[in-house]
Amino acid sequence: MSSAAWHAAVAAVLTIILCSRLAEARVHPSHGGGLATRRRDVVPAGVGGCALAVEPLGYPCEEHEVTTVDGYILSLQRIPRGRHAGAGVGQPVLLQHGVLVDGMTWLLSSPEESLAYILADRGFDVWIANTRGTRWSKRHVSLDPSSQDYWDWSWDDLVTNDMPKMVDYVYTHTAQKPHFVGHSLGTLVALAALSEGRLVDKMKSAALLTPVAYLAHMTTPLGILLAKTFVGEAISVLGVAEFDPVAPAVTSLIKELCRQPGTNCYDLLRDFTGKNYCLNNSAVDVFLNYEPQPTSTKTMVHLAQTFRDGVLSKYDYVWPNVNEEKYGLPDPPAYNMSNIPSPFPLFLSYGGQDELADPADVGLLIGDLIGHDRDKLTVQYLEQFAHADFVIGTCAKDYVYNGVISFFNRFN
Image (cartoon, rainbow, N blue to C red; front, side, top):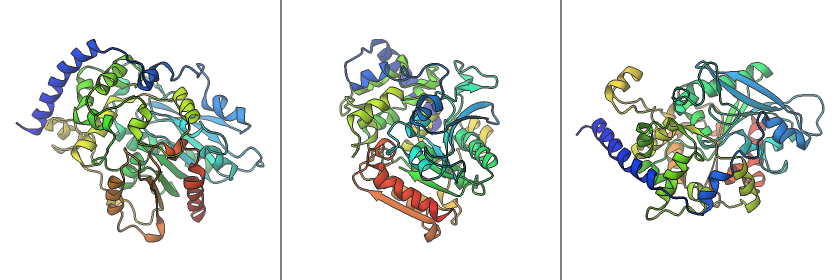
């Protein structure tokens, strides 16, 4: 049986299994079950990130919008300076969040702990991106978010559309090349874009926290189960184009998977990201008040393909004739990390306890960058850190953010 036929057969079998299990699924009390009742209830309709989080703390803030070539209307929040700064505006920095969250992740902690506020207070002009489909970027020039067509995209489209449009907007609006900070999927999008020569001439540098280019060594049990069972393809067959972790179809599925041997979903944040070093209960509670956010099912399928195939490639449509139509090849082309221009400044920071961006996978990326200019590549390894520490950890400023700022200052 060919690879494409085998993929299709597995998806068909899983569809039958999942239809029956979704119908039988029951809610069990746990942190995983509680997730569905908490997120987004605290955000009033029509209130943006500036009014919700930034301005109440005394920071100036602006709401901006950009429209991608394929019609998605994206929101950015801008913090042009710190609370006690003068009227001047400093070097711009664009912050890009990961998958299943939005720009609020950079604003959830105190001004002394959140990267966005720390950068503003250090004189940077901070821009916060919100990927298509998330809370403040859920509009389109013609498509309704309730339609399947609205969600017909993978993270490839973030590489070719969202990130270039937001970087170009900041570059044009400020007349300066921005630095870039990405976390998780935000790093993957940046790496893929840079490997194709995109944005190299419009960004000063990139700081990549928990860099993701490979997922073959991912150790999070629930993530592995989701990927190995082709859950994304199965959900696609079921007609679920939007992957919303708090929607009934997805929460029922996750709860069913949590019953499988070897999985423990009492604390979904821990089960997905690893044993974080400096997250306290209040930080997690605040996080769960605002997150998670939806993404496209195709993005989840694409990430599962990266894990299963061990190669960073464009989205695989499974059927060779469809891939031929999209790419001119029977198999999707790979992103080659060694093609990232060697003079482009990169800062990589990763953790030894991270179960998503596993150190072995980051090691593969570092190997791809072996020819990078030595004075343009900074690598930081923190043995005790896991995935969420880098963005909502109470000690991230001392361990990570001060180093990021020092790195940026080298290239201002």
